[in-house]
Length: 76
Image (cartoon, rainbow, N blue to C red; front, side):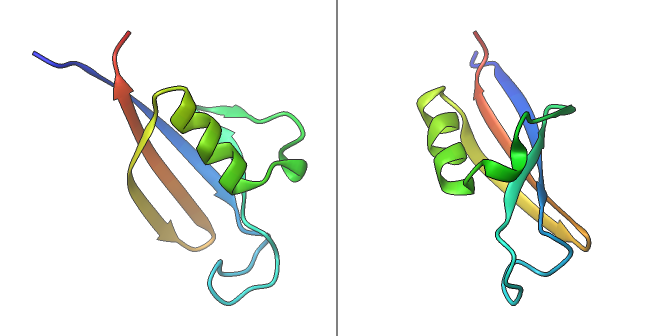
């Protein structure tokens, strides 16, 4: 039976909605740890790196002011 490992990533939207705001959306917290230099991290590059590490985005949620991503990968 396949076993999964899950992760939660909270995004910083800069206080604006991602669709209508002008501030870039950046990953800020991953599995309860604040990312180092998160203000310099591009969301697309971050997600590509997670994909390279075996993570798959399975769900998103936006409830102002928080946006979160839920990811999973095969448990090592």
